[in-house]
Amino acid sequence: MNARSTGACDLPELKLACERAMMLRIPDKYRGDVCAEYTFNVRSGSLERLAITQRSLVEPGDTVHVRDVIDMSMPRRFAGRSYDKGGYKRFLRDMKRIVLGWEGARVSKREANEFFSDQANFAPGTK
Image (cartoon, rainbow, N blue to C red; front, top):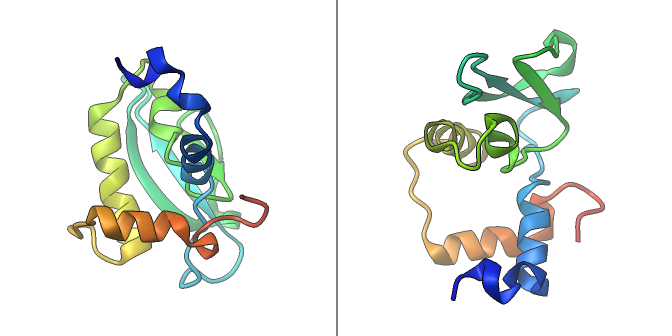
């Protein structure tokens, strides 16, 4: 059985992980009025880049989307299909650079569990 057929999306732990994955706090090292800027390729709908930018410098439009948090669902949400492999590869590279300080960082299961267990890594109001 897969997760969909068992109703696993209704499990409290999974629901919490999904909510937190969409509400990652922008690290404190980025000062001022900043936002997460997601740039998409118009032709493919694939995510091209995730960057932390001064809000005053961003011009949202068809290819640029802005959020106050890092949202791990953005590549899929705007891909126009159920999976965006290239977009997620670029997203994870950029996210590791932003959150961990190095895009080549490797994260163990233990480290990921610790990260997602620490409320300080998420936007205020996230469970």
